[in-house]
Image (cartoon, rainbow, N blue to C red; front, side):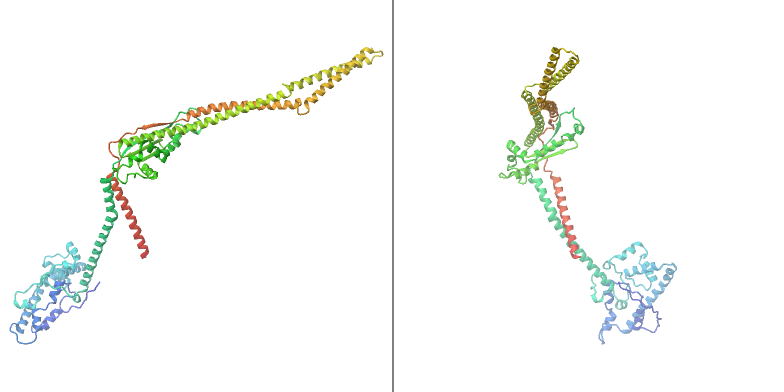
Length: 574
């Protein structure tokens, strides 16, 4: 920013006798304090020497074309008088302008407008007066906005010329912008030099912006537009249309009226068969299903045809992994856990082939469901039947052991034998006591009957012998491995074991019946809700949607790469 030079104002009275260059220089010093900003054309016109100065710069000597010095002084005197008369006429206008009470801001604004129009104003009030004379309101908003117009576009105001020939030769003439030579850098004012530097910077910024926009357009075209065009060309002109066949099926469970507990709460919902549905989905998406479909319906032969585009076509010598990749792309299966429905979409180059593939896969799913439930039922029923057979065999063994023990001692009821011996011993002991009492009574007589005494004594001996024999038999029955007591204990244990085996056999029978009922309730059924039907119109490719999706994908990739590169560049530069 430059500061304009300020000088004191001098007012020099003119004397009638002072003419020539001294008066001209004195009048030059009386010019306004702040010289107006001049355009390059006005600067060239002002710096161009006038006719009088050019003649004065000529070497002294007689010249027929040059006017005489007194004539030049007289012409200059007449011009000064005309200027003083104009200043006197305008003094009244300046006084009226002063009475308007203009603020300092308005006066400064008027001076800037006057400088913009290259008016030689001697003061701020004179600037207002001259602007009003040429029909310009300095306080109008449009004039304020015009102050920011570049100086190269400012219009120069032609200086008034005098009709006299002398004034035309002595005063500077107006030079048009087309003919005015550009000022040299050494004669530029600071403001003009600053404007020229700003214009140069603006041109450089515009040039860099155009170059960056061109590079940006080239990168976007190379990394976004060209790949998108290639993808769109493939979808619109090369891709083979694929026809889809939609189908839906459910895995149901038989009604279980006897179910109880948490399983009974879930028996009527889709969660009861969720595992089977997920297993069927996994099976249909496996290589096993793909190989079976290839063997029975010719899956690989269909996708190896020559009229299918190279991206969707399967090579004739492709491996199972490559065929499985095509299978995953064209067979889509989804399980909805909220509804328990398995949805399947099979795509093929022909609608009839797609429907046939879908029907085949549904039949495979039915076989898989039947196999899963059948295996489960067979396992449960088989375990129950094996448990029943084991219980029956154990009962037979226990019963055989009891019979063997009973046959071992030739006694069917050892306890009864022991009880009989005990009762006999008790009976004979009572008889022995009676005989002893009779014998004592006979011996108490003074003259006992010898025959009766001897007979009673013999009966006592016989009873004692019998009781001893019975006691020996009891002792033999309760001692040794083959005693009646040991045999009785073994028989009791065998009878208890037999009773236990009877209870286990009864429980096994009940378990078999319950298992069979539960197996019947666990039967799974695959019900087809939507049968596969050949479609009339192709489902893929979706040309417009896929092209827009490719454009978004390439744009996102380019944006991520550009942001990453800018961040890395900023980090490296910092």
